Image (cartoon, rainbow, N blue to C red; front, side, top):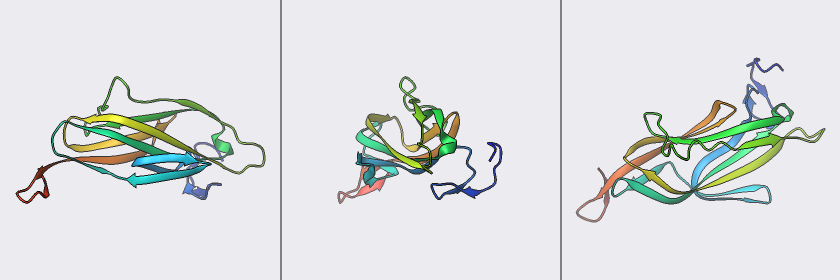
Length: 164
């Protein structure tokens, strides 16, 4: 299949997509993630942070990714991870985007290969409430955009949280 052919076909990973870019089977923000002998262990996936005051610093979380590579993915690639605000500005322009490079090589007669990536994130500072996104891209194309909502909450008269 030529790289410009966008007909939907089932790749070796079982996903019906145009195989122009690699397949991300799992992408989530969570409290904890680990690779355990090739198994991706995920605990506490979330998409909302409740903040009693702003700015808020989230002490620790993880970005968990599971890639499925096929022979068409062989070669050198550049991953890109960036957390952006609603205006598309990077949350931490001095340290993002994070852009590691990696090689994909599959042995002959191996139809697919999966790899887990866990990125531990510490001290993420969100200056205001609103919608943020975790953009995950490869070779200049965004593959996944994970939404993250930061909500300012105040304590009500009975101790319950109320959106501010």
